[in-house]
Length: 311
Image 1 (tube, rainbow, N blue to C red):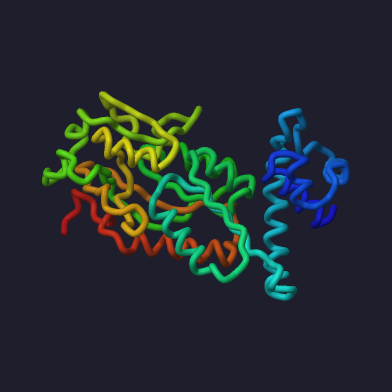
Image 2 (cartoon, rainbow, N blue to C red; image 1 turned 180 degrees about the horizontal axis):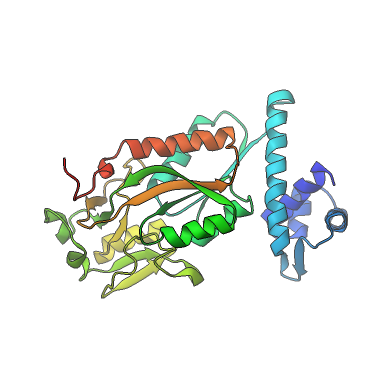
């Protein structure tokens, strides 16, 4: 098994087909297919399921690919330090729940590395997928939160998948509303105040439950509920329907303007925001830089104080 073969595997996954990957790699499709089959013979199991629609990873293949990515990443680091630095790319992938501050931190990371060659991936996705991305080593790290509503279930998932959670900061839940929403005139907002308005949340697929939701009050009954898959949609619904969502309250202004505001929710709960990695994993240079930028957002917010805390 060679590094070149591992690079072939990654290209096939990224392109979704042997044909497109072969074009990108400037080799013939039969040569690529034979190289993949040779790897599969060496390791004793199939990496891909093949069909007319293309190729998909098997369960074992997904795990194998995660390790392959780590090997390539480490090789790229070696080449960058001791080889031809002009040809080396720095690689980094993060999977995260839908937070503006994680996107902003990623933008800052890219700007900081803007003069270097890089291959970066920012993946906003479902909670269960974040855990799977880290377990399979598809992502260097994942960003999510723990609260009383989900800590028991998610902590068990972390243990089962040999994953460890590192806390970044603790935030008080805030209500995200459009600027000018009727509730923005209130001194404080309660869960009962929110009941007449559409409750907005993120789709979790077959894991729709309080344990996987991005809202720590997902199990509170609401008269109207809408679930979407991305942050842009949720912001549009806040503005167009007077909807709301509940999150950390960290709302950087530089990327999205000032159409949305975050107000403290009068409820006894905390959101322990952190990142997950494989147990014992050492963060790469890019991952460490990204984590530092996330910590900066946590340190520069007033969400550290809970509505029931004393001044």
